[in-house]
Amino acid sequence: MVEPIKKSTKEDREKWIKDAKYNLFNLKSEQVFVDLLTDSGTGAMSDRQWSELMLGDESYAGASSYYKMKAAIKTILGFDYFLPTHQGRAAENVLFSTMVKEGDIVPGNSHFDTTKGHIEIRKATAIDCTIDEAFNTTAIHPFKGNVDINKLEKVLQDYPKERIPFIIVTITNNTAGGQPVSMQNLKDVRTLADRFKLKVIFDSARFAENAYFIKIREEGYADKTIKEIVKEMFTYADAMTMSSKKDAIVNMGGFIAMRSEKLFKEASVFNILYEGFITYGGMSGRDMNALAQGLNEATEFDFLDTRIKQVAYLGNKLLEYGVPLQVPIGGHAIFINALTFLPHIAREEFPAQILAIELYKEAGVRGVEIGAIMADRDPVTRENRFPDLELVRLAIPRRTYTNNHMDYVAAALKNVFDRRDSITRGVKILNEAPVLRHFTVELEKL
Ligand SMILES: Cc1ncc(COP(=O)(O)O)c(C=O)c1O
Image 1 (cartoon, rainbow, N blue to C red):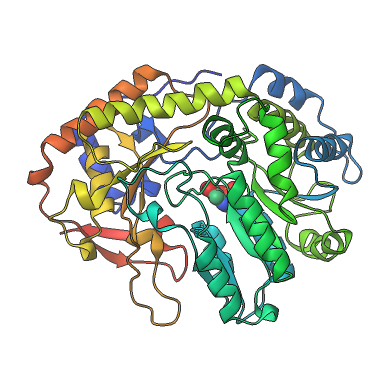
Image 2 (image 1 turned 90 degrees about the horizontal axis):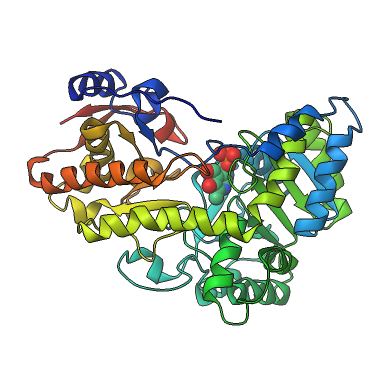
C-alpha cells in the first residue's frame, strides 16, 4: 500500500509544534513528513496478509481465525496456550493482573515504559539488571541488551522468592537502544531462574529481530534458520507477552502465550474481563489471520536482513556526519545520545525532548524522547527520574519508507547537528499525567 506524505514549511511546523504543547504525540500525522515516532503498528502489510484479511472468521467463539493464530504460535514459538489481546500493553495488563501483586519485585532488562507502568500501578517495583555496557552509547558489545547475571542473582538473593512473580526479559531491549539479547544470556537467565524456582517471561515485541542478531553475531547460529533460532529462544521462557504491532507486522494486535494450562486458565479470567472472550480477546478474526501470516513473514531471513540493513543505512550515514548514536546500531531504530549532542542543556530541561522538537522543526521528521520525561517520576518520592541515557529514538516502520527517505532524515539531523550550539535552552513541564506522562505531557519552551 502506498500513501502520500505532505510537505510543510518551517513556519508551519513552528506553529504546529507550539500548538501541540511541544509534545510530538499531539501532532496530526498530516503535519509530519517522515514519521519515525514508532515502528509499532506502522508497518505495511504484505499482499499475503491483505489476502488473509478476506478470510477472517468473525464468529464470537471458536473462529477459524483463532485456530490459525493458535497454530502459528505453536509452530513458530512453541507455546501450547495463548490468549489474544488488542495490543502489547493489554497482554501485560492481563498477565500482570494474574501474577503481580503489591510489594512484588520484577527484575528484568530495561523494562519497557508500559511494562514498568503496569508493574508500578500495582505498587510493585521493577529492578533493572541490564549490563552496564548498555548505558555507554559508544561501547561496542554484540549483545548490549543482555541481562547482567550477577545483578540479577543479587536481586534474587536480596528478596524472598514469594515477592518475585517472574523475571522479565525484553527481546530486543527497546529502551537500551533496540539492542539484542544473546542466546547464551537467555540460557543463563533460565538456569538462574530454575535455581531459584522462578518463572521467566519474555517481552517479545521484536523477538524476530533478536533472532536475526543471534544468527549474525553469536557463535554456533550462522547456519540455523531464523525459525530454528526463534524456537530455541522461547524454550527458555515460561510465557511471553507480545505486541504484534512490531514483529508480527500488523497494525493492531497482541497476545500472551504460555506453557502452563493453569496460568492460561487464571489469565483467561482477566482476558475475558478486560479484552474479550478467549478466542478473540480484542481482535477481529481478520486481524488474527493477518497476524498469523505476519509471524511467518517476520521470521524470514530476507525480510529481516532488508529491514535491519535499512536501519543500519541511516545509522551509518549519521555516524559519518558525526552524530552521536547508540552503537552497534540496533534492530528497529536509531538512538541519538542527546547528552552528547546537546551537552550544554541541563537534564532538568529535557535535552532529548528539545532535540526531537528541533528535528521536527527542521524538516518535519518526528522521533520520540526516550529520556527523563519518559522515565517519569519515582512513584514514592514523586521526584523526576533521570535515567543513565537521554535518547531520541528514530524508529523505522517495517516495509514503509525507502532509503531516499533515510537520506532526507540524515540530512535533516545533520543540519540540526551543525547548528547545535544555537539551541541554548530546553523545555519545562506545564501539565503531566500521574503515570506514563510522556504520551500527554504539555510543555513550554524555555
Ligand atoms: C518492548 C515492548 N514491550 C511492550 C510494548 C507495548 O506494546 P503496545 O504498544 O502494543 O501496547 C512495546 C511497545 O512499543 C514494546 O516496545
